Image (cartoon, rainbow, N blue to C red; front, top):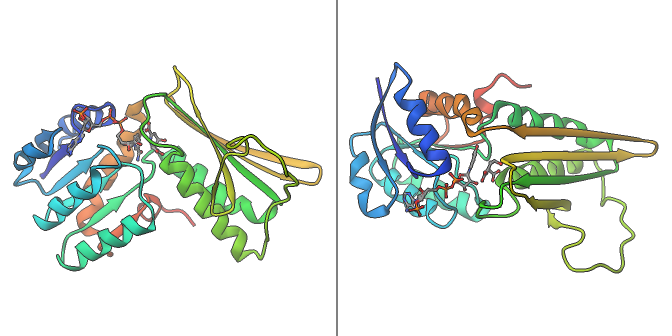
Length: 247
Ligand SMILES: NC(=O)C1=CN([C@@H]2O[C@H](COP(=O)(O)OP(=O)(O)OC[C@H]3O[C@@H](n4cnc5c(N)ncnc54)[C@H](OP(=O)(O)O)[C@@H]3O)[C@@H](O)[C@H]2O)C=CC1
Ligand SMILES: O=C(O)C1=N[C@H](C(=O)O)C[C@H](O)C1
């Protein structure tokens, strides 16, 4: 029986995680935290799931790693600098494991995987991410990660810059530049989490679209992470891909 705690337990995602853990026969819910003053509630947990805020997640991770508690992290906002800090913290605590996944939706992971595979075949690729207006950050962690995967695939294929003759624009009109890939962020009431990757070359386009219809859809991926994190070979694992049989 794995003992599981939740950081951000009363939030949109954290409350779903609490329900999912409580509903799983092989997991025991040990406590939820929504304020760093209450972290002791999860002492004794094997794994803590963090869905909090980009501004607090690093502090949470420092505390968890320091206490030797494995972490499954869905909170967004990880760039290379933050990941390097997590690596440093883990190096000082052998045996601790951290899994950070920009998106726990299995279909979203497939969308990113297919986008990476398609990228070398197209001159142009842009990303449109669409979310609810209460989201704290832009662009989404999923869009940021997808852009990095596409940029890497383009570099490996020897592709250069994408064609773009824009010389005059209202700032922001062409979206954010993430590693050479344009990312456009929409915040629209009624939406949950959606992303479209648009590819184009002469005479052909391809669109890969993913839609999260509810937050329960993330739970199979979260529970997979909770069950597997302790046995992961590396101290830090990025993305759910290594836990799935993708090639
Ligand atoms: N990887 C994935 O698949 C997904 C990732 N996300 C990401 O998860 C994060 C949370 O999203 P969402 O659930 O919508 O956000 P919410 O704002 O609904 O929830 C965040 C929760 O964290 C709490 N919190 C704030 N500070 C701390 C702290 N120091 N320690 C513990 N809890 C704290 C908040 O409490 P209070 O309100 O009192 O401040 C709140 O209950 C975002 O970064 C989002 O992008 C979202 C969906 C899927
Ligand atoms: O805040 C959200 O809602 C989501 N955040 C994650 C992200 O930033 O990519 C995952 C999903 O898009 C939902």
